[in-house]
Amino acid sequence: MFFGSGVIKGMLVTLKAFAASYFRGPDKGGIFTVQYPEQRLAEKENFRNFPFLVYDKTPDNLRCVACDICAKECPPKCITIVREFDKDNKPLKRPAVFSIDHTVCMNCGICEEACPFDAIFMDHNFEIASTDRQGDLLLQKEALLKSNDYFNKIRPTDASAIDAKRAEAEAKKKAAEQAAAAKAAAAAAAPKLAAAAADKPAVPTEPPKTV
Amino acid sequence: MEFMDQIFVNLKSTVLTLAGGFLPPWAVILLCAAISLGVIAVIGPVTMMYLTLIERKVLARMQNRIGPNRTGPWGLLQPLADGIKMLTKEDIVPKNADRIVHLVAPILIVIPALLVFAVIPFGKNMIPADLSVGVLYFLSISSTTTIAIFSASWASRNKYSLLGGMRAVAQMISYEIPMVLSVVPILLVTQSLSTGAIVRAQGAYGGWGWFVFTPWGFAAFITFFLCAVAECNRSPFDLPEAESEIVAGFHTEYSGMKFALFYMAEFMNAFTLSALAATLFLGGWQGPWLPSWAWFFIKTYALIFIMLWFRGTLPRFRVDQMMNLAWKFLLPLSLINILVAGFWHFANPPLAIGGSIAMLWASGWIFTRLNRDYTPEKRTYLFGE
Ligand code: SF4
Ligand code: SF4
Image (cartoon, rainbow over all chains, first blue to last red; front, side, top):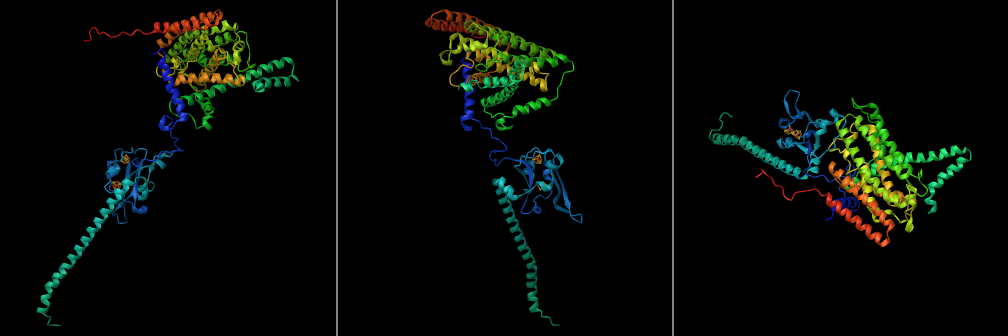
C-alpha cells in the first residue's frame, strides 16, 4: 500500500455514509433517526414507567385496599397512602389519599411486584414534562386512577393473565362462598332435622294430651 | 448566457450611471467603492453563517445523523437563531485578563479575514480590487491573523489559552512557508501577482486550462490546500483549539459575540482560502457553459466540502506530526516543485510531461521514505525477562 492510502480509505468510508444518508434506507446504512414528536416508534408492550392505580368499571371501584405494602416497599419512598375512615371512625378498605411523586419515583416497578391486590401497575406514559412541580408531578389519586380497559390496552398479555387470575379467584371465592352457604344452610338445617328427628318419635309417642 | 454572466457587473454600472446623473465624479468613485464594500460586508458574514449550517449538516450526514432541521425549513433559520443567541449571551472577561487586548483581539482577527475578500475574483470582471500584487496582498494580510490569535491567548491569562496560542503561532508560521512556496510556480508561469491575470492565464482549451491539470500544478495544489486547511485551524490541524487537550485553546476565555467573531474569522478564512485555491489552481471563474460566478462558487464550495470531509474523517494530528508534515514533507516538496515548474516551462512537451511527473513522483517517494518513523523490528527488554 502506498503512502496516504489509509487516509483515502477513511475518507471513502465517510463519503459512503454521506451518500447513503440521502439514498439508502435506515436498514441499509442510511439515516435511522426517528423525528420524535411527529414520528414515533411503536410502543413495546414490556416498556414500563411510572405506576398507576387500576379500577374496575367505575373509579369508585378501585382495587387498592390501602394496605400500605407498596409504600413500604418503594425504595425512594415516593408513595403516600392515607386510609379512609367512615363516619364512625371505622377503617375502610380504600385509600383517602394516594399520591406518587413522579420527581422521586425511579421507575423500578417494585410497587407492582409487591402489591398483593393487583392494584398498581407500571404505565407507558413517558411524556410527563411539566413546569409545575407540585401540581403536575406530584400525582394524586384522581390522576393515578386508570381503568382496567386502559391496562388491557397497553399491556394485553399481563392484563389478561391478571384478569384470568382474578376471575378464577373470584370463582373460587364464589364457590367457596356457595359451599360455605350450603354448609351453613345444611348446618342450619341439620339441627332442625335432628330436632325434627328427635321430635318425631316424641310427637307420635307422646301426643299432647292437654291440647 | 453573456447576460447572465455579466448580470452583477451590469447592475453595478447601471446604478453608477444613474448616480452619475446627479452626483459629482468623486462621489461616483466613492459610491463605486461603497457598493463593492457593501457587497463584501454582506457576503462575508452571510457566508460564514451559512457555512456553519453547511458544516453541521454535512458532518451530521457523515455520521448518520440529520443535523439541524427544526428552525425553519431544513434548518435554514438556524444560523439566525445562533446569531441571536450569541448576541444575547453574557460577555465574561476573566478577572486577571488584559481587558483591552482581550477586547481588541477578536475584532482584530475579523479585519484581515474581511480584507482579503478584496482580491478574490468572484467572476469575469467581478473582482473588487484587481491589485497588481493581489496574491502577495492576500498572503500577507491573512498571515496577520496569527497576531490576533496570539494576543487573544495572551490576554486571557489562562494556561490553556496560552498553550493554544503558542501552538497556533508555531503552526501558522510553519505552514505559511510551504503555502507561499507552493504559489511560486504559478507566479513563475503566469508572470503576474494579480489574481485576475492568473485566472485569465488558465483560460486555454475553452476554459479547461486549469493549472491543477499540470504535474507541478497538481503537486502545488495539494500542498497549498493542506496548508490552507492548517492556516485556518481546521481539523485535522485544529491543534490551537484542540478541545480534548486544551479546553478550547486560544478562545477558552471568550464567550458571546467575541467568541462568535473568532468563529466568523475561521469560517471566512476557510472560504477565502478555498476561493484562493480555486483561483490559483482550479481556474477561478473559468469554465464552460455556466456563468463565470457560478463556476467560481461551485469550485469554492467543492473545496469547502473537502475541508468538511476532512473534519468528518480525520483525527487530530499530534504536534510533532503536524510539524513534521510541514517542515519535512511539504516544504521540500514545494521547493522541488518550483524546479519542476521551471523544467516544464523550458523543456519540450513530451519530455516536460514525463520528466516532471517522474521528478515529482521520485521526490515524493524519497520524502515519504525519509519521513518514515523509525520503528525497531522487535523491542528488546534488557531487564524484562
Ligand atoms: S416504581 Fe419504584 S420508585 Fe416508583 S413508586 Fe413504584 S416502588 Fe416507588
Ligand atoms: S396499591 Fe396495592 S400494595 Fe399499595 S396500598 Fe394499594 S393494595 Fe396495598
